[in-house]
Length: 193
Image 1 (tube, rainbow, N blue to C red):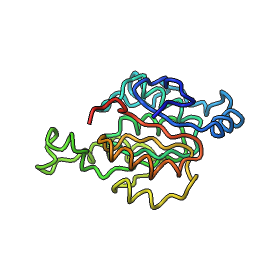
Image 2: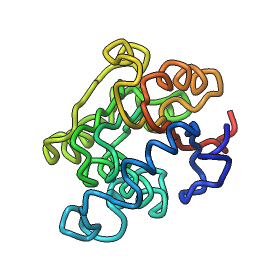
Image 3: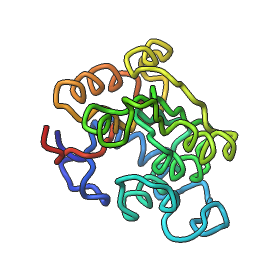
Image 4: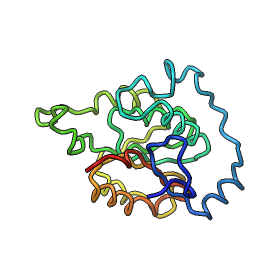
């Protein structure tokens, strides 16, 4: 996969796809304009939006999500964990941020975090996101099941950070890319699995 228009993303570790038509429409509609929600406006304790929540995204990646979210009217996030990236997206001011996660963990995390003993990140996600943001729309289900609720070209942006195995990540991309009007991006492209 390549980054938007073949260029590295500001976030570095993420990946993205943006068609020439989508890029032109984005420039025409938004230019450099954003919603005007300022980082550090009290929506996050310190640093990048969401950086106080445990997760793997860097502060630079969180800031990129936050700034990108300012130009979107709707975003679907596949894989939310405890809400680190969801916080960045919701605090951007995007009116609708769909968080899709079954909260059973991806295979590489199931033993590491104790899923076999009934642990789940959902209570922390609920505290970090659901109780805090009215623009967060939770879809607590598998990615493929949630995709059935969305028509083609029905959301501005899709952010994929769910299962990291190649086949499952490719499946998420195939299922979700048609739903995006403007932009598809993701995280952990360098993850070896």
